[in-house]
Image (cartoon, rainbow, N blue to C red; front, top):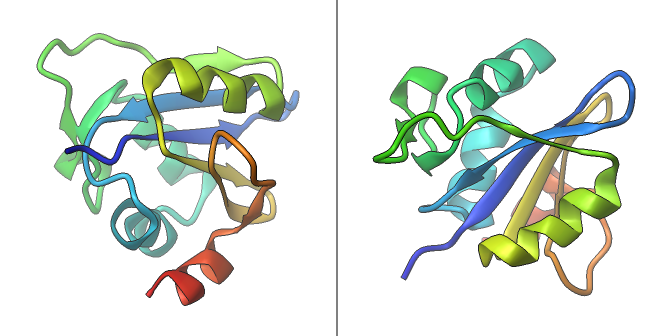
Length: 123
């Protein structure tokens, strides 16, 4: 079974650019990879330019694209639409990079929390 996630970036106009990732989406995998390897807007933007992912890697180049590449990153009006769209993908975990660093949420029931704090409790 896959642990699907969505990875997003808050843009300067507060819209969200994001991609879907099919495998290794739980905090101990994707969360740790994002926190340890994607520390700037530039790095996150390079990842999102790959489009939809089969699996997240330690760099954009190591991240496996979907078998049918070309699924470009999506743009949502705000965090709420980003979160609500996750349900249509069957996503369990959401990651969002902003000026405050990485944040984490689930599509239903939880607000945004700092990813570093989630990882401390997850392990």
